[in-house]
Image 1 (tube, rainbow, N blue to C red):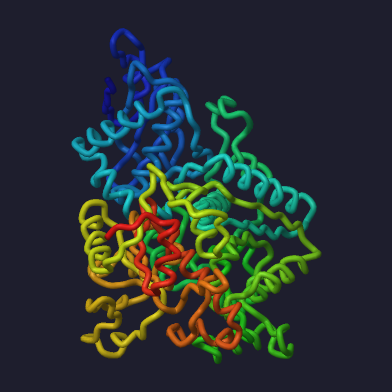
Image 2 (image 1 turned 180 degrees about the horizontal axis):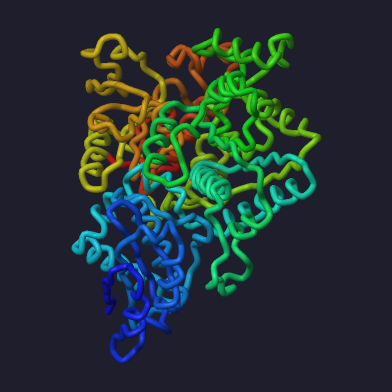
Length: 582
């Protein structure tokens, strides 16, 4: 059974802790423990095998000296693997609880397995409940894990694939510093592979490097097979002072701004659009030392499709001297980022380009390959983190939408619920019921209905089977709006977000052609004018964009995906592969 012991964090506390015993074990001096030090506003979380010595070391640190109390968490069954995992659990959840701003850097948080881990994880939940009773934390685990602050926290444990990417990126920057060369990193990964987790993790790491908050401590014991990448970075990387993260989607910028206000070292001013990058360069005449670009598949070009702000786009090109080019060579948002920054870490999923004005794969690759004067590093993320159906579900959906599944076999996975409804209203009501149970469950649809309620707030936009529904009332941070569960979201409200369950209405903007055995676009039923412009007369391109939209919508759900299909032939095709709920 665990114990939580509290002490005033002041001179001499190490002597008090040194005498701490439980069941005959001196847990204060020679025992694996996790500790929380805090005052009213800040906290620091750590693990150690010598709580007395570690507390004495922390008292010598001016930043930690501001803290006023320390709690030691112990158990007879704790070992090094357990306390590393508990430390990571507490850092992730306390950073998102909102009560304290953590003094911790995020280096070294890792996801690893060990003997009887599932049993210890239940004990972690019990420890959290006790900390809540003691007033150390405020929120329940369930509530925290549904917040943007948790989902986009830089205090996430990295998986093996992400750690490998982090290590190689840090080594490239270290070599760049040593040789005086810039670094461009391209990280490719599909939906749910943890691109955003790694992007925010790296932003926090570089922000801590700038503030010199990462240092090797006396207790570094090589438990992990090699020195932490963060420590290696602190010893080899310098000069990265001006840092930003570029998020092409306005809704994500709003969500990130809320998150950054709770994270030490991160500021809302770091969150940028591509035009913000150019505006800053025009004002300061100084490049960013590092720009991290998430959702780079949504970076725009001018000459394909339709933009909402041509004058602003053209003004940015003039500032950078790119307005003198012609045709396809006219500057795009990727060009702006490359010209206005010394180093870049870019995250992209080519299957999530959903409009013709999104820079296509060939152009994007050409721009990256033109970086001859820098180290070019490429990484791929494949492990599925969002969807409990794992890679099997993602591949299945991709095959379903591209008509590449080799034989008719209904999807079945004990960990993931994927079903097709014949009654759209029942699906919508079931999603609402799941939202009441789990939170963050939403209904979404392809852009196959006009957005009448944009001008008339009383209008209902979508009519199916005699039922009428309203599109999303806003783009900005729609996911967490109180009335979102009563609305139908579009691709521009959910791309980049996680949901517990998602209900997807597949409209008549796509249909199944039994003669060709393929899914095709029906442009007359597609009402996103910016999406249609540039591809309306190219059936193959329009089909690709719409397929990408539905692939993106159908990969938002963590626990499950429900679908309703409007086109009869497409519904019959889906029924060969998707369990039907009548």
